Image (tube, rainbow, N blue to C red; front, side, top):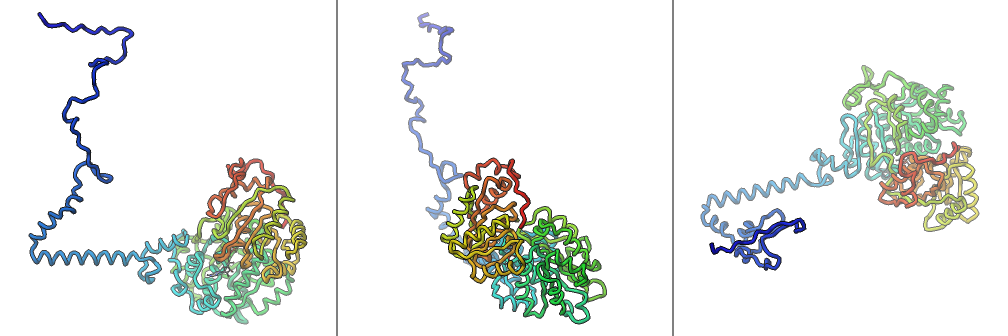
Length: 563
Ligand SMILES: Nc1ncnc2c1ncn2[C@@H]1O[C@H](COP(=O)(O)OP(=O)(O)OP(=O)(O)O)[C@@H](O)[C@H]1O
């Protein structure tokens, strides 16, 4: 029929998989569709815009609508617009005013949000019932003006974070568990509400002093008890209260003598106090305010039974009920029953570390406590730069110690060891190098212990070599360096030891010699260093098998060292 018949392509087995309409030698590089030959370049605007015209931009540039609308507006409308602008500006000013920083607001304008920010600023966390607002300034608190006067005289210009939150709770006569880093002013945070508490009770006289003190502070070591006494005396003397410490190492007769005039406040170590109670040198018939400072340490040191004995010797008639009432400030601050002088007992615990073992004590003696935590519980204070050096060899440790002590740091400095005999040995070595060293451990007499501490405080010695007896609570100003010649046996003791420096906002350095015998604490130490912004974790510790899981692996436990 004249039509050329196209030969049908027969697909063979070996043909390619894809068969196209064009031949391999056709020019397919040009598009035949004209639409594609005259392409638009897309107008793309900022994120979220599609291609096309940016209406906002267009409008703002041309001002077309604005001009059109303005030409159509009546005078009334123009006046109304002005009013609306004013209202908007006023609203904005109001919002800005309400959003001022808490420090710029009077107390009565503080809103919940401001208090939340305030607590965040000071790293304050609390739980347990209704918690009163923290203190922004001393002058804004409900502390008695006479006590405020003393605070001012002592020179505490503003409260520390634990004081900000624990004091108002204490003033409401609520039980407290207070956890705050070392050197953060915990002592005053239980002393101030205690003084206020005593303030409202009748003064001690010949008749009522035979019933014993109003308040009792228990501390694990003699040094800590005496230090609390010194802090308490700063307040008690100007207020006319008597304050006596009952600690081991001094003759019982001497302490009985000190008690002859009665004392509103007793500060004691559990063992000696139990002794005095047993011998009837002292009774606790009207004691209604109890503080357990470093409660965890008291348990560690095996004082739990003594503490129980003492707390069981307190009168039970003023125990708080174990109900929601114990969280109700209005009920807890009222007198009990008919007797206007009878108050509910307030029991508090304070420490920088609160391991689970303390819970037993807390459950038994505290009623619905408010728990105040500053920062992260058990975390080292951020003013201490923590350095860890991996050294096991004793001689290398000694050389490195001397390098540190003779280096950039100024006295006073503290060296911690785990055994009494290491104390004396290192002190000898330090003394022979020209620096003046003293020692503090459980094998020393009380006089020697007190002398060692006072020499470090008054600059008569440069270095204190001590066991954990000095690890807690000891407050020596301006300690620039703490060396853990031996690593502490647990992370709590480590935290307290390094807290001897970097106190009351000052900075300090803690160097720890970590040996291959300390694998039990590798994990906890690594966690602690990782959390601190001022510490680096040595690679040897970071990658060590024992630092991967809690409890470590196969570390050689040290014997039960005596302090
Ligand atoms: N508001 C304050 N302003 C200035 N200094 C203060 C204030 N409160 C306490 N201090 C000082 O801070 C130092 C540390 O206080 P304190 O011994 O009470 O600390 P701490 O928290 O009990 O420490 P640790 O846990 O080691 O026992 C003390 O020398 C104390 O006089």
